[in-house]
Image 1 (spheres, one colour):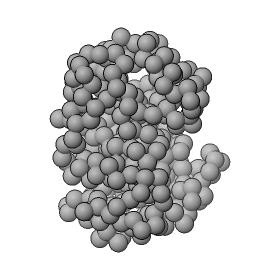
Image 2 (cartoon, one colour):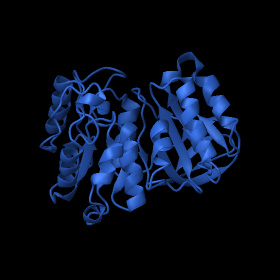
Image 3 (cartoon, helix red, strand yellow):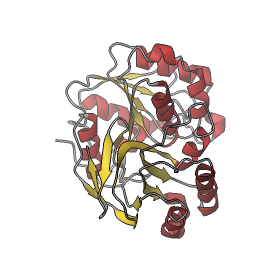
Image 4 (tube, one colour):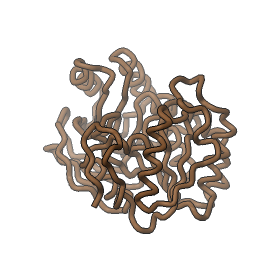
Length: 307
């Protein structure tokens, strides 16, 4: 069993026992974007992994620059790239767990030797938020297995249902169905694509532009207010990002505050595919993992079924 966690609480009285399947023996922790924001909390999370029987390899520069609170705290991209490649190519490492998101992934992906990384085509990389940039690059380069879910720091505040979903997905199993709110009805089926709205907008104008035809696109975004969210969305819409997708599923747009539901409905009205909301994908304790190698289908009534 996974140790009981209280929604939104920090790491006191928690445990990560059972969170990873038995075949995951060694986890590399790296900071591909920004350094950890609270050194003492990072250390607590690392200790929880160790107490769960995981061999934890913290990459050489993963703790450099802590506490990372602004972009000025981001360490040199070459050091971040070296850490990431070292973790990926280490034969003892079974999985890479990103420390956090923040900012900086867009610079990292241009520095990585993707040909070398393709030597381990099934390396699992867990994270979300700014890690969207890395996940999309992995898909583009056909290197590794992107798992969109709580980072090391995110695990510290994840609620029990999110941890159960994390364990299910990391173990390669199928999560239970989830009831969505229907904004525009329609049957949908396709491979999962998920990401931070602003990072999707940025990546869509790079060589790592994601393939969206037939995809079910999950979107979340913290901090950005209605105007910034609308700008990022409009950039994607004008660029044809949603033109041939199967459906769009909204997580949370936390930065929109009391206007969140109004903003989501406004965005949904501007595209023609089926649109749903209410999926627990967000910068909150309710953050369910999504496997970007897997597919889903959604019924007319909004039931999300993982395949």
